[in-house]
Amino acid sequence: MSALQTLAATGITGNLGSIGYGLAAIGPGVGVGIIFGNGTQALARQPEAAGLIRANQIMGFAFCEALALIGIVMGFLFKS
Image 1 (cartoon, rainbow, N blue to C red):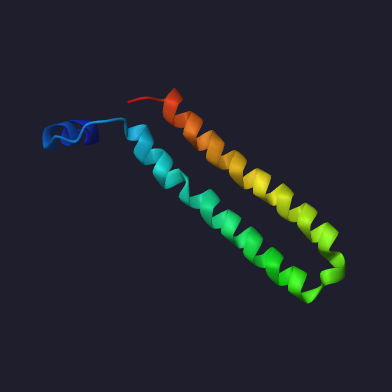
Image 2 (image 1 turned 60 degrees about the vertical axis):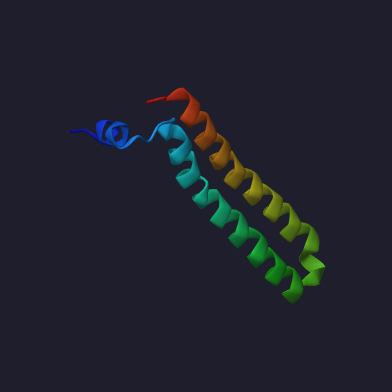
């Protein structure tokens, strides 16, 4: 019995892609937290490098959010 048949037998309905996206959103969420947490520490230690630190934070944030967007698109592309 496959996992989908087991879920159907228990009465759970809906798209498994939404569960997959929920799990996939954990990674970018943790990544964004690390980026801004370490960026805040770096700004506290070297305030004169604020421009460079902020630019790197924004670039890292964009990369992490791109992973989250890819995750949500995959949920729509590969429906079970």
